[in-house]
Image (cartoon, rainbow, N blue to C red; front, side, top):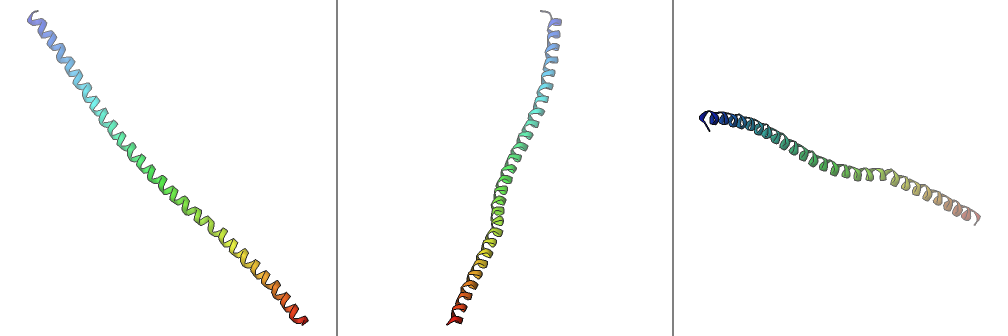
Length: 100
């Protein structure tokens, strides 16, 4: 092998090494971008977990708030029935007293 052949092969290797360095640089940039994306997805997942927990709490509070009118309605119904029964019993008692 002559010096000229060696020089040609070295030049070919240098060109290939330069190309590989360029490709490795591109891969490093892509790797960094992928790492940033993974971190962003992780933050989003954590955020969604917190949102789900808050939504559950709000659902529980909403359930309590929905029960208030039902409970109030029941109490009003009980009061009306008690008043009517009291009025009927009072009327009967008054009639009995009037007959005596």
